[in-house]
Image 1: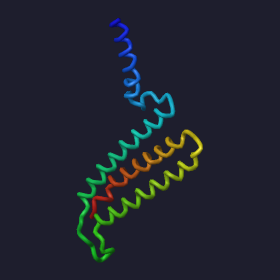
Image 2: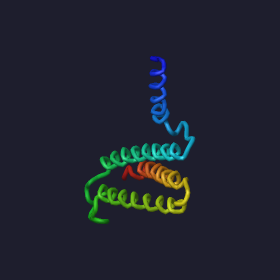
Image 3: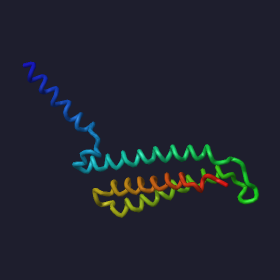
Length: 131
């Protein structure tokens, strides 16, 4: 009797163990593929936030009234907000191209990940070192 209870308990835990597995290791169905794409994007988004916050601290907040009247930091904030709007709209457009298929989320999240990876590179550019 105890053996049957132990087996039943193990069988009920097994699905939780499988679900807790890294979806990027298995990807045997659409849900796992989407979950993997989401994890990959979330990691790049986290790295982007780290890079952006570091750059914000490094970019001068002083104004240069001869050019725009806005400080480099204020312009960076404005540019980042506009870049987020661009990324989101661009990737939503790609999502719409595949709206009838199961791959739409992977396309969208892949686009978001790729755009975010590129932005991380842009923010790390030596051009941000100033003169």
